Length: 573
Image 1: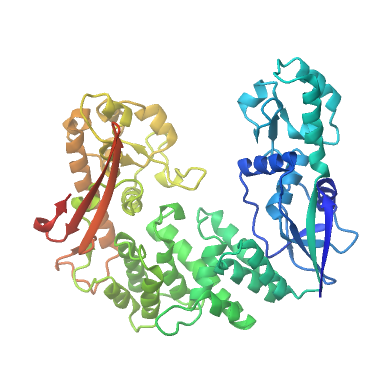
Image 2: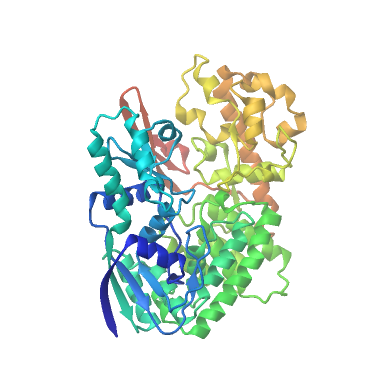
């Protein structure tokens, strides 16, 4: 084994990438740099600042690779390629800038020597020139210089020429390179994680991915394919990291803690493959179950993805054609909803997962899982008080959405189901019943917290928000909404609460309607062994401390609210 040290300029490196002589090994992750980071890199090269070194691996055996995010297809190499271990973000960024990639339009202000990404303002200002126009193969620096003379610059002509020349020379800047020769893939994988962790403690997920890729070439590709499969269905949060966590959990538990990533990386190839079959099979049954029975269209609605792991492991432990009894399936969904409402995995999630996953081996897993939540007799219910003070960041957002979709709520603009109203980020679209602009101009002093309360949210499309709601009070636009659809969205009927002056009464009335709908939804999946005539417990934990911050009029206030299941003990300080 040897380490070769050498230097190459930017132009040569870019040519090698295009020719396929520099490739990304499978252990590399995706391109993540923002436009501002790309601009800072170009500025560093322009000013002659250090831009870091590059680390490559050279081997006589072909290695699994992944495509580079350069916008073009790399050529088939005529020689054994160099595999890039450290420097992917920088070289990919440089390739994009020097090939005029649409997402790497870096511009340079000839007067201030500032760099940034292209914008409408820089396009109109002749002092800003695109870096590619100066360094690209068709660059005409003489013509650019002539144009700049008429831009009313506060610098002399000779200085314009010097700065353009310095910009041109960024393609001649050298990068120091270290090339690892004849290292084994597993050792290279370990080196990759070390250099990419910046001297900090190793990232356990990256270590697992690198090690698994080294042991089973193509495995990372399987994970990415599986993740992409679910992303197409709106479950984009089931990414590679989630899958690695699920794979780790699929291993047997020992002692008081779940099997760690270290155990995953030490597991045999056969054990990992068996675990992956387990996870793959579980996902194939759990996602359709959530889509069809609960009608959850996107993971953006799920507050804690950790609550999916016990479901995945339960179904993954059964063969594909195994019939799960309806009462067990409904009981698992009831547990999932209850665990979400009680924020089961909001704290020490690994401890809770350990407890819950062990219950999957019980003769009756549903009662065992519910017992971990403290639910043994009457089940759970949601009260209006549980919804008070909540906003769109609350776990109850999912429940409000589900209450509407299970009631058959439709969009007020196109009449389609609200499940179709998901934006580009995968989040469900919603608006405020009482628009903020109207509440702030009605003369009443409603705080931002009140205005943005969960009980004021309705799941409708952008078209509805723009064309029907606008900045009008619900008293003005609700007559155009059918009575059945108003009921499906849990809108109170009292005309007085639809006026801005009755907003607080509206919140109280709608909280009560939503709480009733959510509890009814929970009861649809309630197991038979939980007697319905028993007293249901609230989803609120026995004791909690809630902090809320308010800023306005030049001052900030932090409100601490201590809550208990005994209202007489509640305090606000």
